Image 1 (cartoon, rainbow, N blue to C red):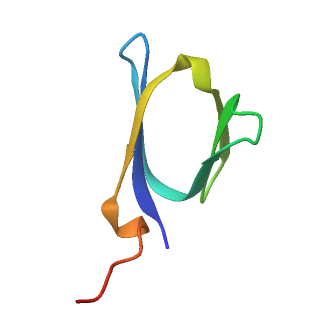
Image 2: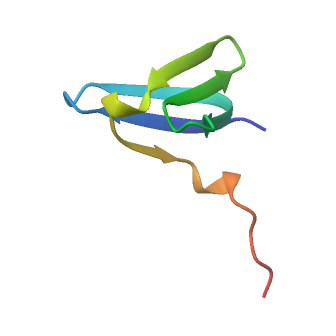
Length: 63
Protein backbone atom coordinates (compact mmCIF):
# COMPACT_ATOMS: atom_id res chain seq x y z
CA UNK A 1 0.00 0.00 0.00
CA UNK A 2 1.36 3.43 -0.86
CA UNK A 3 0.14 6.76 0.47
CA UNK A 4 1.05 10.44 0.30
CA UNK A 5 3.24 12.12 2.91
CA UNK A 6 4.01 15.80 3.31
CA UNK A 7 6.95 17.08 5.37
CA UNK A 8 7.09 20.81 6.13
CA UNK A 9 10.46 22.08 7.29
CA UNK A 10 11.18 24.89 9.77
CA UNK A 11 12.18 27.16 6.86
CA UNK A 12 8.73 26.48 5.29
CA UNK A 13 10.07 24.37 2.40
CA UNK A 14 7.93 21.32 1.69
CA UNK A 15 8.61 17.76 0.62
CA UNK A 16 5.57 16.02 -0.89
CA UNK A 17 5.84 12.29 -1.64
CA UNK A 18 2.99 10.49 -3.37
CA UNK A 19 4.38 6.95 -3.22
CA UNK A 20 5.35 6.51 0.45
CA UNK A 21 5.45 2.90 1.65
CA UNK A 22 6.34 3.58 5.29
CA UNK A 23 7.65 6.30 7.57
CA UNK A 24 8.84 6.35 11.15
CA UNK A 25 10.98 8.26 13.63
CA UNK A 26 14.14 6.54 14.85
CA UNK A 27 14.36 5.14 18.39
CA UNK A 28 16.58 8.02 19.51
CA UNK A 29 14.03 10.54 18.09
CA UNK A 30 16.71 12.14 15.90
CA UNK A 31 15.73 11.11 12.35
CA UNK A 32 12.59 10.65 10.28
CA UNK A 33 13.02 7.82 7.79
CA UNK A 34 10.69 7.71 4.79
CA UNK A 35 10.67 4.76 2.41
CA UNK A 36 9.16 5.24 -1.04
CA UNK A 37 9.01 2.84 -3.95
CA UNK A 38 12.17 4.44 -5.38
CA UNK A 39 14.26 5.72 -2.46
CA UNK A 40 14.85 6.05 1.27
CA UNK A 41 14.89 9.60 2.62
CA UNK A 42 16.35 10.46 6.02
CA UNK A 43 15.52 13.84 7.55
CA UNK A 44 16.76 15.24 10.88
CA UNK A 45 13.76 15.78 13.17
CA UNK A 46 15.10 19.18 14.25
CA UNK A 47 14.52 20.43 10.70
CA UNK A 48 10.83 19.41 10.65
CA UNK A 49 7.95 21.72 11.53
CA UNK A 50 5.28 19.06 10.92
CA UNK A 51 4.42 15.91 8.97
CA UNK A 52 1.04 15.01 7.52
CA UNK A 53 -0.11 11.91 5.68
CA UNK A 54 -3.05 10.23 4.00
CA UNK A 55 -5.57 9.09 6.60
CA UNK A 56 -5.92 5.71 4.88
CA UNK A 57 -2.73 4.50 6.60
CA UNK A 58 -4.58 4.31 9.90
CA UNK A 59 -6.76 1.31 10.69
CA UNK A 60 -10.42 2.05 10.21
CA UNK A 61 -12.69 1.28 13.17
CA UNK A 62 -15.80 -0.65 12.29
CA UNK A 63 -19.09 0.53 13.74
